[in-house]
Image 1 (cartoon, rainbow, N blue to C red):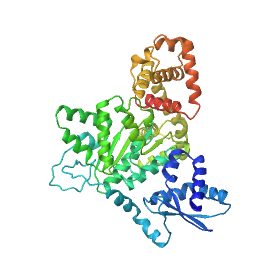
Image 2: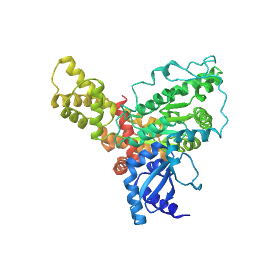
Image 3: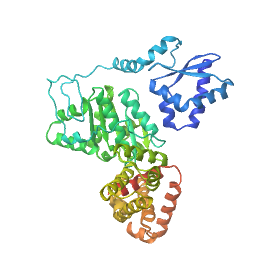
Image 4: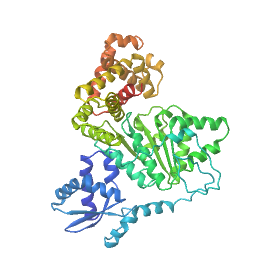
Length: 486
């Protein structure tokens, strides 16, 4: 191992300890040094986007690590070289700079040479979900018209508000939109209700369509429905043409295929076909692949083989920025102090945030009254009271069962399988936290269990919830569903 590689490996080791694993794997893991002298170290990266991200986000950390390891204040220069094997030696000269603008094309060309492109006889097409340059004389399969309304033209990267809660997901989505099928495939975005997943994936869809490429955007329910109709009508060839000849396939809420073995088999086959031809695949879910119950191991492996990113609840500054952006879109002026009150009161998700703003704007326009902090308090708190009354024992039990893909009978039974016991404990915790039920009453509602069992479950979940753990994530996702999908 030469000196530059030894130094860079030490830098990578130190950086990996200080940032999250997804960030390290996305931006830093696949970089390597190609030149070192007493003034600078030149580092190869795979794309211009990665180069910009390193300069803006991690450059200071990298510089500090290099100085700590070498004792010298070396300058770091990032050079885009596309996909190059690390053991290939390379000299750095002015030609590298000229190559940067064509690096993305080089990546695509490199992959294209490895694969014999499949002949395409039919191409799905409609006004919203597809944009194709294929020969118009070919047979055209018109997809389910429900797809037409799914992609909204106003969902773009330009009007997506970026903050700490979503910046990694945004960066990954932007990179996929610029280089579909090359860098992060599949892209798997997960998070709770109303946090911006739909905006991100539809931004990708709009961007890819603007490049003249074909896009199919469906929910998992629509995929399942199409598959059932195709099997019943013996039209599987049409089904395969619809889903397997596009440049980008997006399946929203993929968690709903859990427990459906036939559907999982077809998702697996479709995935392999698209992936094998360098076509981009994107999935969204309310949880990471590892937390989707009754999902086949080989599908989990496929999902986890790409880029997994999450979107979380936006912090105060991002919520204010979102509100300001919505006001601009609606051409409505509200004082910043009022927006701060709204952002402070509504913390769960972007959808509820916009709903609160719409309610306030409607009240002002219809009644021609002045917006005051008291009015904001009254409207928001009134909505919360209504929501709280909608929550019941049954809704909590049903929502948890749906989230984990298990049956209510199993919750009520003596079944002690790990997945069922865990879901049962979450229910006990939520019944106590959200409805303030007594431990004996909770035990009675869940199959006549002893109050000490309920106390143990509540204390265990409470302890785990305080950590940044999967339990905290599950509880937050379930609460989002309870309060925002009623």
